[in-house]
Length: 187
Ligand SMILES: Cc1cc2nc3c(=O)[nH]c(=O)nc-3n(C[C@H](O)[C@H](O)[C@H](O)COP(=O)(O)O)c2cc1C
Image (cartoon, rainbow, N blue to C red):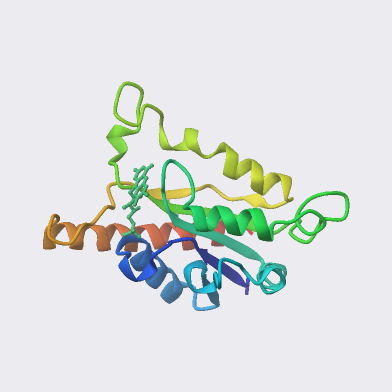
């Protein structure tokens, strides 16, 4: 059975609805998953890099799970990428530790899909924002699976309704099923 490592890049996981629901559903579907919450692992502004790298080495499948922030990963996840995917470990002539592992990019957006189009507020399709992350994966010898995202997942207490909450939870369940399916198909 593949060992799955899910890196949760949410900066405030206790305030998350969409990402938290996705992770709960996914962990129920794939109980061999190790979840690492970056918000809990950043101590005095630093990650324990060797612990993070060891977790990556032990995994067959790596998931980057995050809320879309300014068309990319949140700052805490960018820091993890900058610090943990180091030269000599993840790239460079000696940096082969991640070669051949699968990477699933999984995220949620606030804006609905219809806004991700030319002439609408986001101007480009969601997929057009992903090349920097996909290239990061490729430079590290990771095999990117098809990225999975769910749009219109923003929930603000007091603004959105109970019906919105239920819609988001149901979309999170469907999202987790798609993740498990993508991983099981791409061995
Ligand atoms: C700092 C910040 C930046 C955001 N940037 C985007 C963005 O670029 N595009 C978008 O569709 N939503 C954006 N959002 C909305 C989040 O993606 C959305 O709230 C999140 O996916 C919901 O998941 P959660 O319940 O796990 O937090 C942003 C939210 C914040 C707080």
